Length: 95
Image (tube, rainbow, N blue to C red; front, side):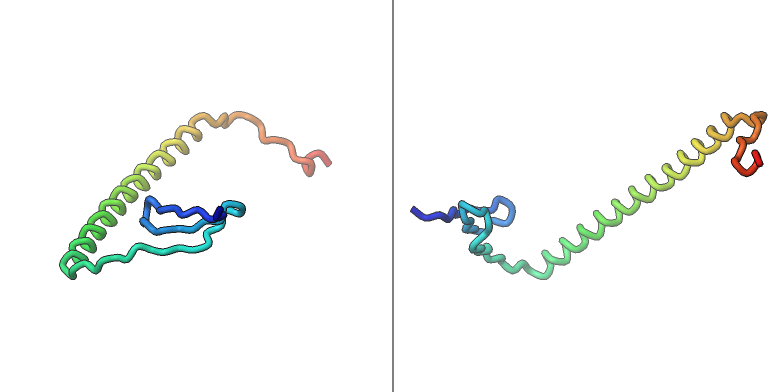
């Protein structure tokens, strides 16, 4: 009986031979990719560019909102600071 398992990767459809004892990949045979046309590549590039642009805009809005929230938290914390409380004593002040 062989101590190797043959597995088909669900992501890239590569054939893998894995040693049963160690779990290490012994051999990998990748599926051959077909060359797509140049126009398909350009469409894919345009789609990728649009996705990147929308992601950038979304992150920009999140950052603006984050900045606003931090400012509000800071102002609220300033309101709750007791200004009449005495300064804390330091070891230096006790001498």
